[in-house]
Image (cartoon, rainbow, N blue to C red; front, side, top):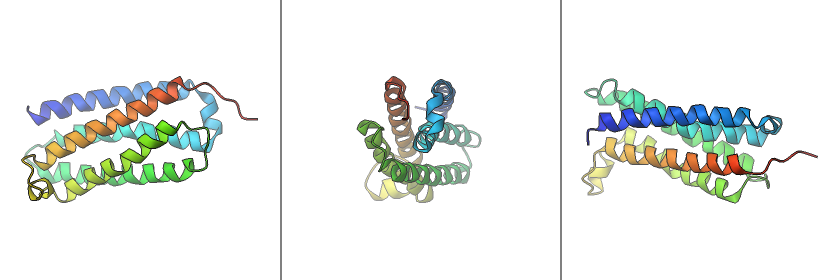
Length: 164
């Protein structure tokens, strides 16, 4: 498969999910009154926005690997930092579904892989894999979007709660 086709499709899907997620967040105004929910909503959105941005920027100049590598390194670090921040906040939040917390934990190694492969694209070859770095990134980004979509789905169906 031509990776530019994959990344073009990924960008469209990721930014569409971002827009839908923004609508869901706006439809749940009670989330804005709770700092942990605001942060969680932001991090779930990041699991769509970051892969969308990485995908779009990776196809601008496919003959310039430093562009995708710099983009993926920065996005991986931003994603990792945001997930670690939300996990710290959610540690004491007993209202967040356990499955959502688990998916956030799974995002930690995925964002780390995104950043590491961008910085050291020879890692797959050194591990004996026939995949190129940009292909490993495609897999990692797909999983980030998948886990983000699962979190969004679970949070969307969660019963509304009011703070006492």
